[in-house]
Length: 520
Image (cartoon, rainbow, N blue to C red; front, top):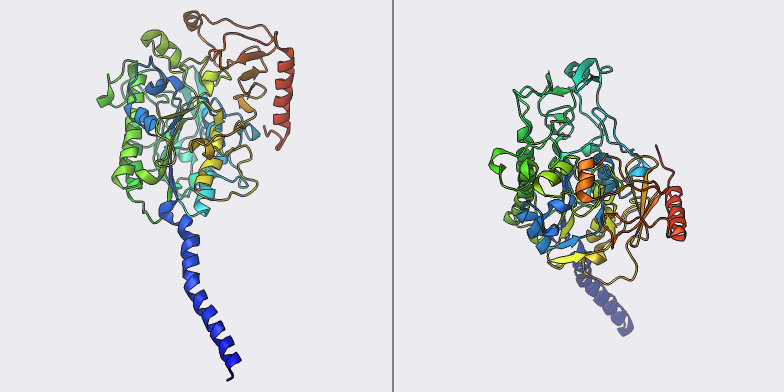
């Protein structure tokens, strides 16, 4: 071999040797950002029918101590202008888990034994996270339908209030088969819950099967249980023999903390804890009685706050607290009992906002929204940015460094820069649409709020509350408010600003027309 050949061979050997050393280094470098322990766990705690003013930290006149959620806010960022997509349960949940406005699919709740609200073509947050390597779990309220195995049409006739309603009896359902279309069909590895606390069937479901088969019919009587405020609001239907609604919230709390304890630091996880509280029936456990100055509802809120505290404690006890994004919010504003609560206890669950659940008024969809993420979100931060729960999907997938399919989350905006305290020149949402029922719309653009009706009410406001708050009704075809100056929506600026009204009306129609046809 001549000298030249020796030099070439030596050069090849050196390159091969260098490449051999470099490959592990590059592999190590490229995988650093994808190591499971570097990807944040994600926990969403979703309260039910909880008002903006129920949190002590954002209502100086609150009669309810919420020390755990106040602490969460002090350790993270609190949004003062956050909204649910709808003023009612199921549509808001659908919007949160798909990153799109609910009205692209539905305006109504999922009733007892309804089919799934989802289509198989829908891309959900748990699906994207699961495909990205996350362990996923849903614990608590589902309320978005299942593919029930029904033997026949409802054969029961049950007196419900003043009406006689059709109702499914235990024999009308085939309980032996798995029930598809629920959480485990939408990207969750695990589900445990009661479906919906006041809807049948009244039994625990684990994954896609009932833990115990219902054999009786729900017929709440005063001799069996008592609510501590308001009515039961139970729909008639199958239940297990010893079903006890007072055990629902404690059981969900235990199941959540147990699931967290089973997780490994080698694999990131996503927990969607959908609480049934403080939704009616208002049934705080006895140890919480008298813990607030806002009656039984206030006590139920204290228990809800306690559950959130237990979840955060479980994260800390298991070494997850420093690498977990915790999001706390609620599906819509408070239920109608809030009117009497304000009059009796001087506690305003809706805070300074007008209206409550179901309404297009601010009180129907202006909800609590807190995010904690240690070393990423500045503790004690407060943001006045206009955001929505539909933004959660884009935000947490960006935080997890997961690319979503292009067709996913069409209305969702990434608010990660805001969470990290970065300055942005443009608003997250140029416009934001609010709606509960077909044809009744609200549109936000900056400080302007436009409603295409002479009222934002869906639920009738009692005259006594109207008098207490000195509210007046409006006569104009639509409504226009400067929401920053007038959060209670007292001063209608519709007649004085025809050009703004025209612009807002045009923008609303544009939103409704583009991307998808509204599917009623």
